[in-house]
Image 1 (spheres, rainbow, N blue to C red):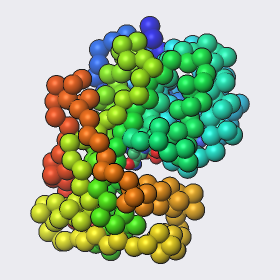
Image 2: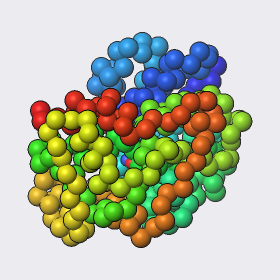
Image 3: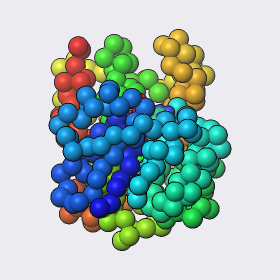
Amino acid sequence: MNKILITGATGNIGIELIRFLSKIETSNQIVAGVRNIEKAKKTFTNVPELAYVHFDFEDSNTFESALNQIDTIFLLRPPHISDVDTYFKPLIESIEKKNIKKVVFLSVQGAEKSKVIPHNKIERLIQNSTLNYIFLRPSYFMQNLTTTLIADIRTKRTIILPAGRAKFNWIDIENIAEIAALLLCKFDEYKNRAIEITGSENENFEKVADIINQTINSPIEYKNVNPFKFFKQKKQDGMQKGMIMVMILLHFLPRFQKEPQIFNFYEQITGKNPTVLKDFIEREKHQFEIQ
Ligand SMILES: NC(=O)c1ccc[n+]([C@@H]2O[C@H](COP(=O)([O-])OP(=O)(O)OC[C@H]3O[C@@H](n4cnc5c(N)ncnc54)[C@H](OP(=O)(O)O)[C@@H]3O)[C@@H](O)[C@H]2O)c1
């Protein structure tokens, strides 16, 4: 039996990943590594076979017992953790000490090109360790529209970002989680590769607002703001400084970069097409209406 530890289990990707893993018939045992076991159990009432361990990226005392008997790890970087040396270096060392060899790391498209982002440092840390790895490098989550951007959409009917007319590649988290589940089960076939997971559309926010407006009753608009104004506004809204900086990096830098490259790994491995924006927005349209 292969024991797979899922970090970030209660987040966007983690919940979908556990849903897909629970549908795949294998003898794998899935273990959710979470900060609060009781809270997590409420999220996964429909997955009775799921096991839980206490795991906190910010408390290295939890590593030893969380890693016990684990064969494979799904590793992600919680968005507020950017200090790789403090939090990820000791974790990777603990994983090595436990003689665990398989890590699937949720990175980001283009991580290899940008030394300033933490995913790049984490990838290098893993490559320089004794671990075998798969780096999943997804593009821009469609679900950003229904998570980080939803408050402005609902209350101001506006998407406010310093993204100009930059085009993003849009991927559905369900597609990423489906791939992650398959790769965790077929690790050896894909080991020591970096895999880009993209959707089929590169679109800017003006176009995305248009697509949303074709589906809902109360229209929204896209407003481009400069990074300083964005920082000030988000600080006023109560967003943490670190998170604002991540939002700026994620949305401002693409203005100076080439359009994202589109890959067809999802089609190749599943035989299906990835979700398109129109279908995602139709699926989630209740979220965009005035509440
Ligand atoms: N947004 C995008 O477009 C995009 C694109 C490509 C890659 N990514 C990457 O995807 C990752 C985020 O994935 P996500 O959206 O699934 O994350 P998320 O929804 O923000 O969830 C974060 C998860 O991490 C857990 N967590 C937070 N702090 C923790 C700690 N100290 N110890 C243990 N667990 C902790 C949270 O658990 P609790 O329930 O305890 O809070 C939660 O399960 C980031 O690395 C991001 O850079 C994002």
